[in-house]
Image: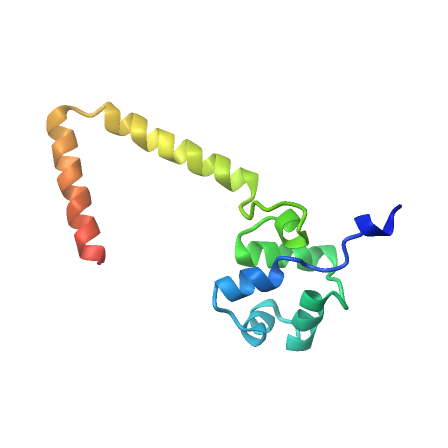
Length: 117
């Protein structure tokens, strides 16, 4: 095996952590490991076991492939597919409503949206 194909660090861990404004210390506490270990993961001086890779991916709701830098797409395919199905179900249900019910739904949605802000 060519050494250039060996993945020895989590290329996107630091990027994910910083984008969520999470410190190494916070992440280490949440994952139940030392802050030093998180630092070593980011630097590539230590590599997590498979169960820790999965735990980190679940923590950030991303794929292990994204953590490893194998893909630039952070969201696992199963989540993308389920979101597409959910949205198409909502659109289909909305389209099946009567005009009067659509108006009511639109007003209700506006009211809910205004209250959340």
